[in-house]
Image (cartoon, rainbow, N blue to C red; front, side, top):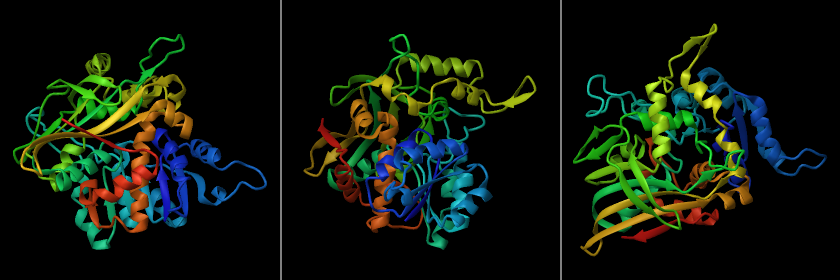
Amino acid sequence: MRILLVGAGGVGSAVVPIAARRDFFEHIVVADYDRSRAEAVVSKQVPSGPAPGRDALRFSAIGLDASDQDAVGAALREHECDVLFNAVDPRFDMPLFKAALNAGAHYLDMAMSLSRPHPSRPYELPGVKLGDEQFALSADWEEKGLLALVGMGVEPGLADVFARYAADHLFESIDEIGIRDGANLVVEGPDGEEAFAPTFSIWTTIEECLNPPVVWEDGGWHTTEPFSEPEIFDFPEGIGPVECVNVEHEEVLLVPRWVKARKVTFKYGLGAEFIDVLRTLHKLGLDSTEPVRVRGLEVSPRDVVAASLPDPATLGERMRGKTCAGTWIKGVGKDGGPREVYLYHVVDNEWSMREYGAQAVVWQTAVHPVVALELLARGEWKGAGVLGPEAFEPEPFLALLNEYGSPWGMREG
């Protein structure tokens, strides 16, 4: 397997040291708009010198504009890559998705194509849903015998694997599947006080948190207002109670396609301060992606916000705490009685920094697509068309995740 990894930011930079410990691939080309950033990621894995070792042959770096579909296709062909791994913001999904299809390469991403709210009833009905543009081309992928594995990160990704595992092994029927994400992570500022510094791409966070959240219920999708239906969810391994609210997320669009459940939701533990900041950005129009003219330059307000905040990949040394991603399921168990479980995955920032030099949130996002790629390389996962993680047997994934040294857990009740 030869992989074109597009994006050398937080997640992309964490993918390389995770993959370097495995033998399932022949070569990874790390590509970024800023070639020096891609080179820096590779150089950490491939030290210079007269005998750099086998990894000198397994990683290389190039400059690449993810929005240039033709250039991406040319890079796939030039480097003879049979998989495109999309590790950039979802605004670039479609040019990368189409470039892979046209070049005859398989494709994997961690966030699906963007949504657009309903033009007149945004908080009641979905408009263009997450992933709609990609699923519309599924027949083209099937015709070519190619796989586009979409939403294969942690959330979406592992959370979807958990949903399929629960449906296959734990429940006779499912009333509700709720993805619940929370953390007790703290980022210290220069003065030692807690700082406002998002641990994941602020561009993506603004997109998913300010769009109308989608809920699957009784056979159809509907929307609600951002940050609606707050609840306190008790997270495991010392994280404790965190208030979670409705947020737009891919699992709600993916899970019902393969797993039967009366209701599917996604709730995120954002915290009051983060919600207040997002609401303020929205009021000021700073969440907009439409360019405005500033001193003769065309700039997107959201890009300015992103550029003003620290790169999430650089926060690890200033972070402490744990992050938890998981899937809560309620229904009728295999024994015919009521059952409620939470399947989860926790990463401690101290551990991920010590073992991989990556902060917990980006490491947790990066490990799962690497596991999926290894299963594809082994032939244990296979398929054609546009498929989500739920379309595959969950047992090989969960077993291999344990082998990667990052076990998952289950809590009853």
